[in-house]
Amino acid sequence: MQFDLTPEELMIKDAVRDFADGVVAPGAGHRDETGEVPLDIMQQMGALGFFGIPFSEEWGGTGANTVSYALAVEEIGRVDASLGLGFAAHVSLGCSPVYYFGTPTQKREFLERAIRGEYLAAFGLTEPEAGSDAGGTQTRARRLGDTYHLNGTKIFITNAGHAGYIVATARTSDQSRKISAFIVPRETPGVGVRCDYKKMGMRSSETCEIHFDDVVIPEDHLLGAEDKGFHQFLDILDGGRISIGALSVGVAQAALDASVQYAQQRRQFGKTLSAFQAIQFKLADMAMEVELARTMVLKAAWLKDQHRPYAKEAAMAKLFASETAMRAASEAVQIYGGAGYMHDFPVERYMRDAKLLVIGEGTSEIQRLVIARALLEEHPV
Image 1 (cartoon, rainbow, N blue to C red):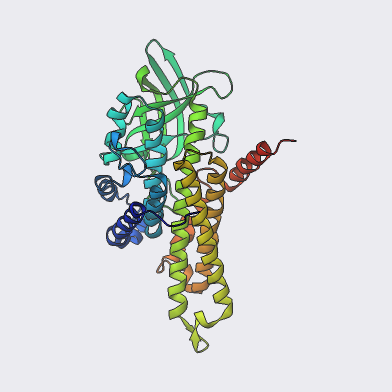
Image 2: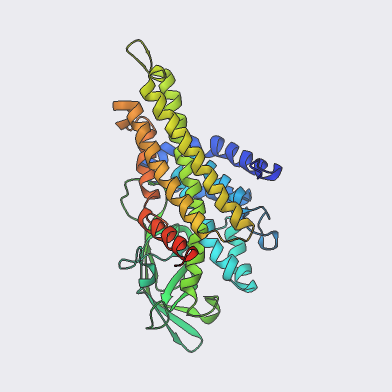
């Protein structure tokens, strides 16, 4: 077994870390307060090739791999989880469906520009009546000649306000799970987008509601085959869980770093907090879980790169890493004490941001179902 990163993976990790510390971190707290979406920073990330890390050079990517991409998401998430979420959603959910299921013409028209950062990409899956039960999609796409007419509503969609296109799922039949995916240009008549949610955390990540009001889509905007959208988005979600796992590791690492620093500075009863065994145990548990989470995320990424089954491992990585982020952030607030509850210190932001990670991209409960079903399939009676 080889646990060392390759020279290329280390180079990408270091480059993204430098960008995160130098460009992203300074304004993260301010953006959290204002809810400002850092579109300029995301455009820089596209220009630097960050969005193309997991994609082939043929379509404007770097030709790197999923491991490198996970490392990049972790580094951005370490300093700004909101931006890390926008990054992960753009690449894993917005670009990946077109990359894996799109035609060459669709890739040239939509994917290449998204990889360059000319615009963002969004994935319209969640609906008012279809959250964890994504197969219960109610948005409809009715075929009329050589076009499809879309009607329905999507909620909690990341990046939609600045998206060049939205990959949207819609029912194309009355039969169960007969769902198709479509590339919907953001400016198509009938597409309405509102981005005015008031959120607990991830405040500078753009979260929107989308309304499709008799949106006419040419048949060549169908992504893959008709009625195959359900299996497409299951595949996309598997990959997306790796990126949310990586983002979770970044948040957990930030909470650990802040706790170690504060524990060595804050004095009580004549000595630093780091001298108390109770605090040492908290730091040790945090460090252990962060390392375990990172290892699980990178294993799932490596399996994907090797073209081996990875759905169960991706669910495990997302589940453990997101719950690690929540525990680490909570413990960081506890170590800071009353100060941790104040807006003056970043750990309260880490805790608010971490909560979404155990909900989005499949709740912890859904991840446990995915893992359990995989185990039962592997060991039939």
